[in-house]
Image (cartoon, rainbow, N blue to C red; front, top):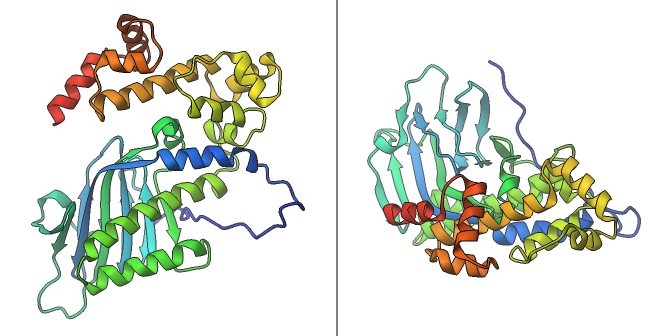
Length: 339
């Protein structure tokens, strides 16, 4: 059995602020922007209690994320490519791509689609699955699972760089800030106190956010694309300006001035790091925002065009179709069909 190393988020040792410049400090505002814009939409949580053997399968959910917290027991997380991750009590896992996977107590066990199990409501957006035999005193495993639409807003491009599995070993000392939160989750999931389901859901939202922050801060020093740009002082302030004011009609010169470098150096560096020209990136960012307004907020096409500063609805529609591959009206229709 080949096991991939767990994705462990480590907390760097404390450093006196003036002693060693932090290359990430210039982009700390951008990380704050990303976390502020992060949304977990349509969240559905399950408290799952099992017997000594179990096997669950989860289908592909593009645009969604899975979250797990294993409070009691051990499990194997098997990805659709066969990669295995061992989980033990205290582990928290975020799967930002919604990739198909299985959760099992052993490799040779049959699996059953998670949606086929009977559920009991525990409150708003939280239900329970209990397959622990009545004659068994102690469950084989107790876990909290969530599936949600994973939206980083204007920073959505960052999610494509994330690994399929982001696992935190909160039982150890790798990420001490998470230990009290996950300890509280274990207490809530095992005690069954009044209102525990709602408390669990809120704690899970916080843990997912902290995992994303920890990955950006500590887990991707050598990543390309957006992450490299966040760490590059020649680009970070320009990208921050784009994300703070996505409706502004930016020029390359204006963005370069934010970074205190020449227009040509900024454009060349941006293309090499992000993989797309600055103004193309700006347009894509605006269309991501437009898509959110159309599909999630239900705004009319004319209002979206006006907010983004287009002189006509036709000009906006052309830009939207060029970037997304479909006219804005199609996004509006998807919203109506989903509602």
